[in-house]
Length: 328
Image (cartoon, rainbow, N blue to C red; front, side, top):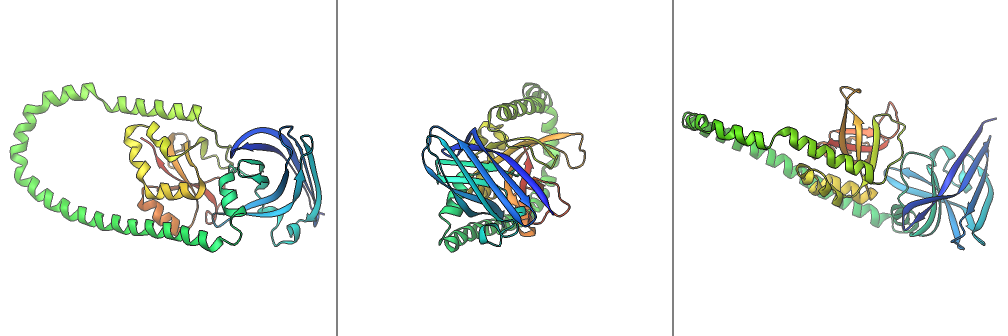
């Protein structure tokens, strides 16, 4: 008989932000049967919460209701039994579940995550609570954004071709002017040397690292990922890109990045191992997403060439993770 036991802490989410630990959930599998026990101790609340088991499917957050829990004098518990492979009379199995959410309203809820993906209560509210009867509308909106990105990708390809043609013309013109320019270069050598002494690449690198270090220390930490490619990471929003070195500000207008933020409501800045040398590390900005060939093509066009899944798996397709590009 298969036996599995999950014990996880439950946290209060104050206006969508993870707060203190207020209880725990114990899930016990014995063969085909699954026992669920949830205990809460939160003296500030006296509401009845809908209990959902949630998971992700093709980039969307899904949820199935598993009962309700009422807090009386700040205390509450839920005991229920269901089937391991058919949770609460559905076709959803336990192995698909990523955690539990106890929902009253968007700014008043509890959550327990079982994987390495932070709970986004705003996303849960939109895709699970409001998603009933509005799935087609949400899908059309997502497809509209993807269409805009694909159109921009086509424009980028056309611009690249134009740049190649312009470059060839410029090179011909430069060859004609090369002799005149070489004389001026000799005269300007001393002045250029002084300018390089005043502003060196090392100075830019130092300033950039200091700003990233400040962000890594002060921004909300993301959980430790099972895939050891990501050493540490924090959660940011597009407006926080302005806190990085000025050479990274162009990312704030990157359509792929904005599209990823629209879907998941956060971005990642992290310290990761280099692909070519695991002993060396770099800082990156990451866009949450799911690995598919079409997504890879679009990500590459917008400068996000590497995908890091949150868990190690030989097959990346369908895995959640981050499309990343190196920070300067």
